[in-house]
Length: 469
Image (cartoon, rainbow, N blue to C red; front, side, top):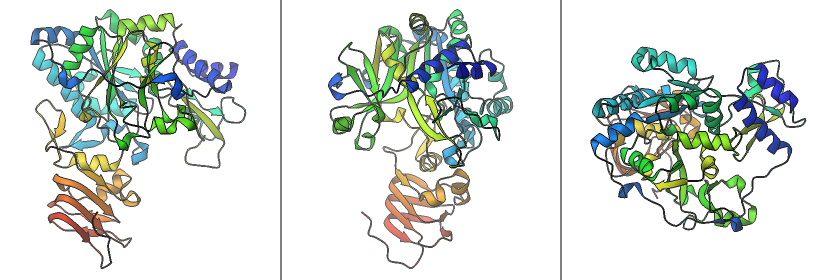
């Protein structure tokens, strides 16, 4: 433990960050499993729904907005999509990036209600410089605001054999890793941000991921959160069969508190119950509402550290070199803090509030006419449903490869599903309708020419192709 603390102190990390990591490290050394047996929890059947809520009048909203801050988690690089800069700087719609659209949403809300809702970006050491450089060019007025940036902490990687901080002289930066978005709490505390926001009269904090354009500042939710005087509110959505492997919300029998249970916290004999979406109906969208006074009091009573379940990821110190030593990266999730508050709640929101861009399939749809940008700079479906897109990972997993094969996004507004097998170059003027399968059996890119493709299998090479399911 002494080596861990010394390394973090030498790096200039705050006491709050060190204390939070010490708790994670103690769980690691103790061999904590974090398992949550099915017998210890109750399934949740009913929750309040956003669709049933109605906001206050405009004058009330103006006051509420003046007491509200919007915080976007902006620490990700999008490395799984081949990006090397802040993921929020990826162009997503009409020449605008995630960050552009988020900034414009804030400005629109301020103008419409005449209220200076606060805006905060939680950057990492990897995204801070790129993000501020972009803001300086496109949104210099926001960059000048006080307390715009909350900087995420970093955590030492732990040698999987010795359980001591790893050393890697070839690239010392690789001795560190992100601490997960549960770091928001020690970051707010250790930086003085929490005290500063409260001193400025900010009571309500809305937190969401910068790559989730569905996570807008919903005024009905803000009104509900304030009226109910909740300490913590989680937006959840209904699980479908496609979500059965993901975590769910539950109630702990011992104290009646809401908790999150992830797959890694589930015993083998409880897997069937875990995956039963008719029993455990709701998953966390990672859109959270936090009462800052309650957070301050909860942190104080907990000695400055929320007791969040440990997430232990085993990797190699150099993620690009499997021959380098194995390490543990210790993380926490911010949603798991729901169990730390005396007066926490959850509300069921429509699925469109959970629309993160995690893959090039998501980006392909977002860039098409299936989505449109509103006057308020929100991104909404142009039609009734979102099409399903499955591009061949071998050729489209990385953004630069997808862009090289896409002259212009096809029209998807009348499409149910598109599946692409092999390298297909999309020409300008393509329209997909219904269910479409495009197949190129060769390894050389083949062009799909302009035209309408409806309810069909389109073979770009003279081979036998499967019938469309």
